[in-house]
Length: 184
Image (tube, rainbow, N blue to C red; front, top):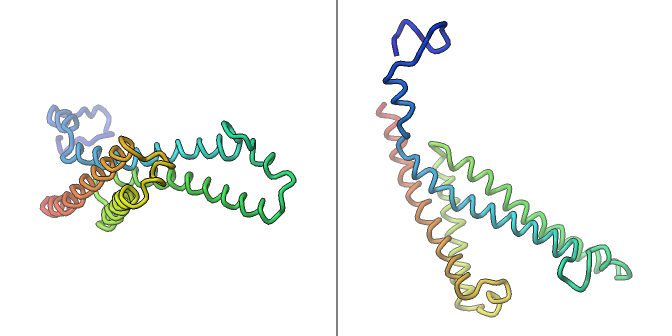
């Protein structure tokens, strides 16, 4: 770019070097894209869980008990309050997973994050993987009840392992980005 003319000046046009530089992918773009896939998948599962919560638990689709307000008629107040509290808690958890995944996706896609961000993500995915292992070995009946048996369990565990790997790569790359920026 010529020093006497800047972007925004009348008649300014980018040089061929500027056009080529703008078309080159930035370093680490592929890793940045791959590293947010676990967050996007977590958000998709959260949306599915939220829709299922609304359809099954609130509206009673596919159940004999019907909608939540129909079930509550004629029940003791203490039982209704407890069940409504659980219903609200489950809905908030589903919505929280969606909101947290949106935040993590947008924050994780940036060129740089604080080191603790990837450490927290690594911790969350490690706990998820460990919980899947413990559930598979110690509580196989519970895992079948929640639909994580056989191929579904392997898929969920593979996703947790994939997430731990890409987050680990991003943690390592984070130090390199800081050094690259300091060099120029």
